[in-house]
Image (cartoon, rainbow, N blue to C red):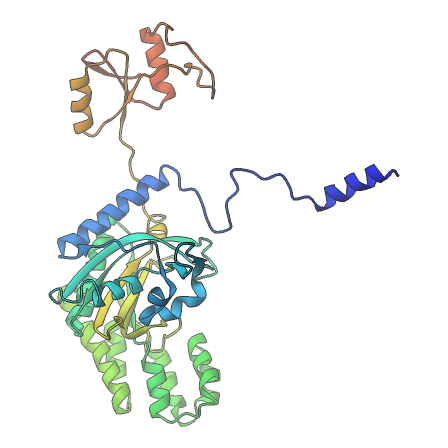
Length: 412
């Protein structure tokens, strides 16, 4: 074999495959119609409900300096953050993996003097290093949510849940359930019960897995209480009633009482809402300090949204909830496209404007592409535009009507 042949074989073994312009990094996708339209219209519907309850829309930046975005409540997001150096200042910047810490920063700085309660809403894209759950594949995620800053009361928690429920009802999302928990509860209980520090990690893992046998083995004198807590998970009123009968130390009892007060406040606003409680759930709540909520739908494993109580950068109490529109909009029918009207050459412009006001999309004849529809197929501007040609163009472009002069007719 010649040296040239060997070189060609070596190159063929080491050269990268030809690059495709359609190739995207793992976890990033092009969102096309109708999905992009469904997302945009759905986010608008969510934001409309938020605005109707007095939540003012804000738009934090996509990137911030590392020392600001990852401060306070954002510190727990460091391992999910993409970083890049600012070529101007030479300081590290971070692509936001979550919008809530940005709202906390804004509340403590730019909006520090604004009247409380401070109600803010937001929507936008975030980028994470890895998806939050195994069933998720996206690294660019959409968020839309609300934050209620100032009051630390069950009524504030309940307002966030109630507004979120109304927003989902507006979208027509079926079978919604709100699951309440108190992430500080388990650590507080283990500390108050003086469970040995060496045992706590394994015991918390057992509680997280809902492994009653392991809890019984590791729980010591607290085992019976912990197993009762595991069994308490379920419909809110039933859970609260059972939790009230458990003998708990003072700090843990106060946490459970706040949970019960929040359930009562939610019921006062929304008596029929499907509401559950899981008293020992704590995994994934990295910066939350009180009542937290996860939104599910019957028959679906993905979270539709989550949120809860936390502290802003200046330790001001706040409560919020963030939806995942990319998950929500897989559960509802695609947004209906506007009916399309083809504007034949010479179509009346005033009639066309009137059609757009009525909700039609108008597509003007431009020439330059043949009715055959082949990409790049040319026709001259001088080509005769007769009625048959115009109807063929209208059908090719997905139009249901054609406007010729001042007359709009439906295509057969």
